[in-house]
Image (spheres, rainbow, N blue to C red):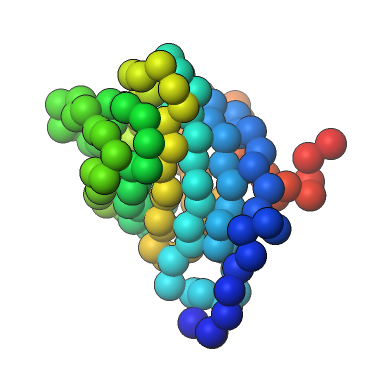
Length: 136
């Protein structure tokens, strides 16, 4: 990892096919250990079932209310301050159960790579986290 700052003003939020909005906070070659994204899930929305091939993930709940489903665990309600641990290759999704947006940080180790996202809902196309400059 190299010393430095990733300016928040440079991180643009974009919508994904996963049914959430992502703002890549830190995912670059200067930090080979982790990536950090802010996720926003609108009220009543459940993200797509997915896993990350070889990548573990932690959700740090910032605001809102939700219910997370991980592997074969029963659904677990989450609130601000909770940390959700998701092992690599583990199926996952989260539902916003509140009236306001559910906001959380997703910390991936090693850093998130689109090629390692596994869509568990359909075979024809995987949801993705496109780079902000690739949006039409």
